[in-house]
Image 1 (cartoon, rainbow, N blue to C red):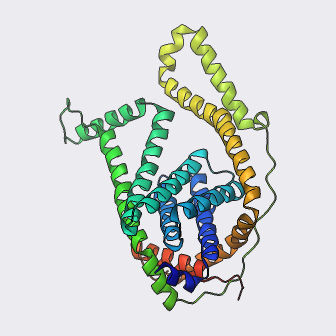
Image 2 (cartoon, helix red, strand yellow):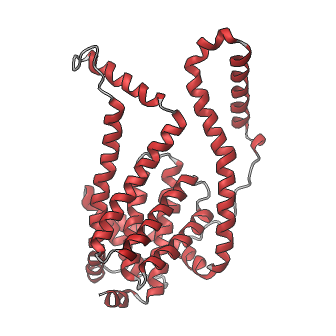
Image 3 (tube, rainbow, N blue to C red):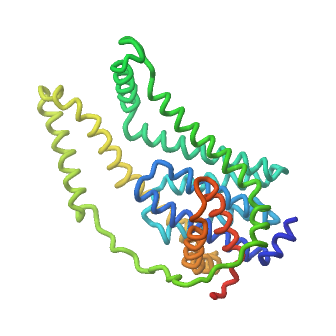
Length: 348
């Protein structure tokens, strides 16, 4: 089955490069954009797309575990080059999905079961990671504030009594995790069926005309030091001012108490973004730079495909404009993957 499918799209090496480039485009393109705008459902769209591609890598490779790990390393290298503004948690999320996929597809004999488990566990991790980050930033008071707000609203509408405690935060967390769980089931189910869907699509689709694929800009934005950023200077000044007032004016502590949560959040964000995250990112970039020299040819080949695959993705989205909802997203994903696998490197 694998050999027949591989022969339709070229040899295994070409298939791995194309799927790796598509995975990198998903992480660096869609992922970078959604992280830039702080979308709350990044895990569903970006993580779900990654799960589909990991499943395909496992299907088309003779050694799924090794192939997924190799593709994961290439994706991390390309992500660091193309989308440097992606936060460190994004690297952790894609690494978790890749490592979990390598484990499941190398240990389980059932491809569809491995795909389903990858979909559910991969998206649950994304949801729990966001909840953990929220708790670390805002502390437990954020959940208590949500509880108090929900209780007050329900009491005003007479839904509950004055002494009731609905625990709205638990309902919110449950709804959020439930959404990711259901999405994981759907994506895992689709990932298990995707190889057959792609094979069928290859027989009914023809590669669209490729034009307007531009090279990626190679220049990096100039780095500005901490004290060259006015906003950061003001944040530091305000934090120091509030800390001085809190320490040297005890009578004002009650007045400043409501601001303490804000100070805590800003302080945690400052420590993370300006101390811990840069240090960890520097270590990660050093590791990836060392590995990049070992996989120079594969990284270059994948980078050359990124602008072409962007054009193919735009064409697939335009072709599915008449479809609605989940049906459009499913057909869009199938077309993008099929076009990527059919692409021969020759522009029409």
